[in-house]
Length: 344
Image (cartoon, rainbow, N blue to C red; front, side, top):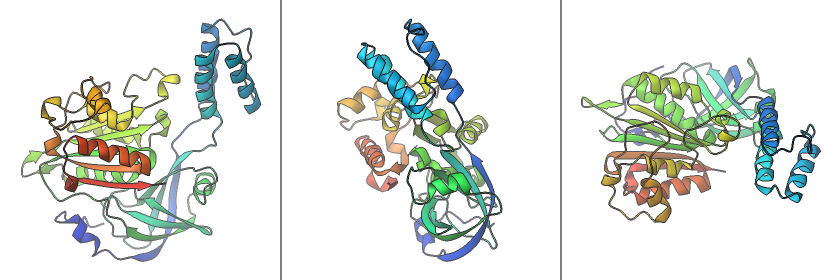
């Protein structure tokens, strides 16, 4: 597939055809995993630490979880009851919750990294960001199940290799800015990282991380509740191992319940602040952001961000994107260097 020159990405959008193509599914992979055995071990340990293993039984059915939580709250173990309720949310959800699907069209499908397509499967249609780079041979989407959703449950449960879907597009203006020496900062939650997967792959496939002989740092801050809710986590870790100018910062709010996770646990915008060089910040931040700016990162990444030398891309659910963009604007990043897209 021909790689499009990055002279002006936004101008290039107008040159792309808006067509309908038939695509064949070449593979579907579940990204989350069954963590019920881990949950059971952790819950058993919590009860044992409180000396309650004889008083309360480990739950098997959903109703048993509610009975346990109610009992702990009634008997004065409120903090433990809250932690158990978090585990209940994890074991009670449908599976698979997160899948990636690869597609192959009969003819070349031109698009820019970061754009989305309309996908029709059966009698339902939905817009999905392309997680693939134009430098790759196949299209790819990443889908998180939305309970009661129009299409995502069917994709997670039924979509299989050799199925045929309709792909219409491309659409969207969440694309890379014109070449510069600025560092690139990607901020996402959940499947909001899908367009950034294609963009990051494009950057390193084409050498776009180097402009005029000067190498640019590429950052990805990705937030989720649990580690297996992070799309493409292994690919991003491998990329960070291969490229010292790629910094992957996962932010996991609940993973420490089930594992020895010692990385970032805060919101993406707060983790971002911890990686900013505070000597480069001159704008007023507000109490919360200023507090994070003074803290040391938990990511293990030693590099730091200079707000005057970065361009920012943000994607995720609408409310989160607003928070991300607001935080970046407080840092003093100009509006014309911020590209964002929200959904939901």
